[in-house]
Image 1: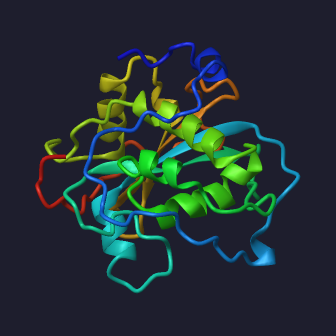
Image 2: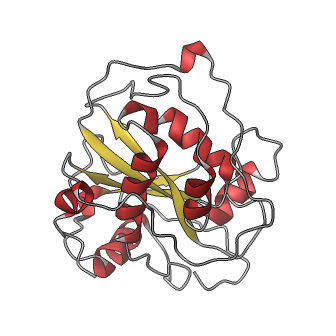
Length: 235
């Protein structure tokens, strides 16, 4: 799969519907309620300098958020075997503070929730991402999630549980090997305090082309990476 497709042009002529990947939707899946926003969390008026596609390592997300009573929206409430999953698409400024909750918005429509569930399997997280990030650059949730889906679906996710002595550098190499045109400098590796992988974040310019992350690449190449294992061990 080629990474440097003319994505900007493709988005301009895209059909309204989001092409969903295949998985079993849970019975009763519906949009989540609108999130209450603390006025202190609002950061508006910041020009977008680049985009960041956040891809979570779901076993660690579940470990942090699913077992601690955190109010952070659960990424995988069903506990399905899963490796990476889409967290969200973030418009960022040149430097912090980055735009968040730029304007009040309503709930996501049911069709978009169904279409995105197999990529981001939590209606609560979708609602959070739309309010916190989508509202800072898109007119409606359909447009926001269409762009997020197009970027995410072009990423070939490597199997990292088979990589011996995983480091941030070997993790970047695994992504580069699978995705032609994706430079190591566009891959931000996020670890927690224990050195466990939480996310891989891919940086793009304003035309959705992979680009060096302005704020650096996170963990240094030599940093060992600990993995919370998936249930199947096949990711």
